[in-house]
Length: 341
Image 1 (spheres, rainbow, N blue to C red):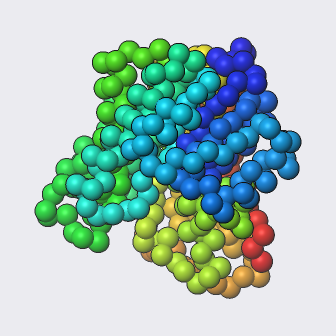
Image 2 (image 1 turned 90 degrees about the vertical axis):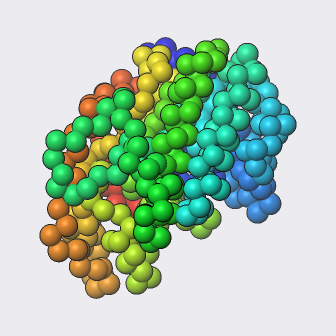
């Protein structure tokens, strides 16, 4: 398969020090692309360059500082000579104030798109959205279908509603910000018709290896690793839903960037449904001598959502990378808890 960008091209990855972002950088470097990764501050980020320099050699990865995605001058600067953009960075403050989060998330997404539009060299743009931009599932609810047209209007309404309980408002605001950001990106692309192809990836819960565990928290994977510290808050934070291996999620981003068959498309990074009964059962098998695992919630149910794009994403893993199927839950969790006794 011919790639949309020739090998050796420069790709910009925002949020390159994050859980998903660093895996995207890793995949791109393994395919012989050069990567410019943005971080909010370069201070104390030498570990990122050290990791990729030791693995792929010097000169193929560089870190650049973009303190704020409101800084359009900085965005213009980092876009120079870039052939493709993977925009991963996002507000993960989990503030409960929709006025502070949602308009800002939309505007910063548009800022990165506008900066890319100014560069004739940019031919592909991939936006990291979220499964929450389509749906927050409810256990045992049947007949729900997620497809290219599905947006999470329920969460947008909840984020702005005075009736939403304070305990759940922060997640509602996060999901609404992801929903409105992705929707705004598609509306902008339709109106502006930039010289690049826009694709989005909607990841669900990411499990799998943390590339640099001494310096990265690992997002959703950290919630499982917290079990070893006696912190079981994950059981309240994550209801039954789908998971995806973080490596598969990264490869889908790269497929959206490089596979010419992906053209103005939403890709759904949904491997399989899981609940905590599944996860804790696997963990007990992997670490039979550890007695600190929580008991799963009783009668927690499962996610029966039908994801219309699931097979499409799985096929792209094969056609782009030669991978046969999704990485299973067992392997994802084993990789994610690597190093924990």
